[in-house]
Image 1 (cartoon, helix red, strand yellow):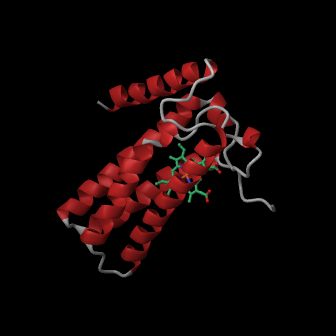
Image 2 (cartoon, helix red, strand yellow):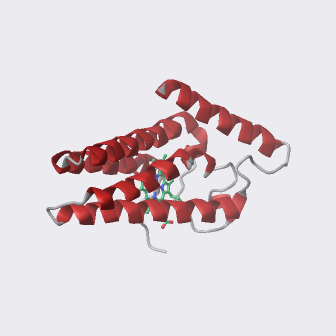
Length: 161
Ligand code: HEC
């Protein structure tokens, strides 16, 4: 199941690349600077949702009603990660970006990392459904690690502007 899904994502990327080469607009609709701005906004949204989950867990009496919508947001958003990085939406836009060129030279690993986040977010969502808050903490931690694992490899480290 997961493998089929991943192949689907890869196929989407390949199609987008082929369309781009023909000088048209990618399937997701956005290219270049627009795609860059759009993905940064979506990433920020996922960051906010992650923080909301972490903050809720810190209260020591986490409410599944707070965890769930945020896990949902991440699960939904993360499905689209592969469409947020069309070729030409990196540093060549002239805009500030931490997207490293390796995203486009090692798309397979990039897809895997995106997929891992989708799985971790769906898992957190399912665990929140059980209402067993003792399990929510570890599931949220796993999700955070999945995000970090992609950033570690594909996102430039903080540097002075
Ligand atoms: C497949 C790789 C990948 C995954 C998975 C991923 N990110 Fe990112 N993220 C990136 C890249 C690359 C950037 C830099 C984008 C840019 O600057 O153009 C980024 C940027 C960000 C930013 C900074 C946005 C900004 O411009 O201020 C936040 C916040 C963020 N990610 C949160 C998350 C969270 C939370 C998750 C997990 C739920 C996540 N990311 C999963 C690759 C990923």
